[in-house]
Length: 73
Image 1 (tube, rainbow, N blue to C red):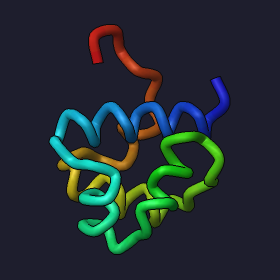
Image 2 (cartoon, rainbow, N blue to C red):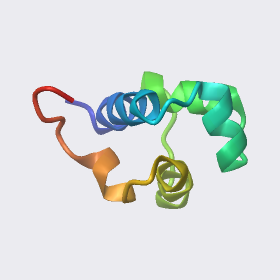
Image 3 (tube, one colour):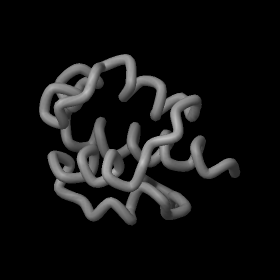
Image 4 (cartoon, helix red, strand yellow):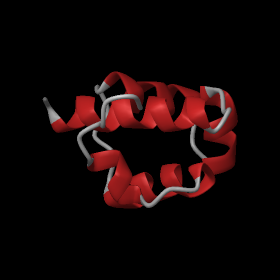
C-alpha cells in the first residue's frame, strides 16, 4: 500500500476511535480541516512534524500512523 494511503487510513481509524470529527481534530492540531481530509485521502504528504501534531490529540505515538493496520482496527 502507498505510504500516504496507509497514513490516511490509520489517521481515520484512530481519529474515529478517539471520537474526533475531521474539523475537531484539525482544531486541536492547529491545522485546517481540508488538510486533515487530504491526509486521510492520501493526497497530502505530511511531514514528520505534522504527523506528530496529528498523533498528539489522539493519544498515540506518531509511529502508529505508519504501521500496517491490524485486523479488527
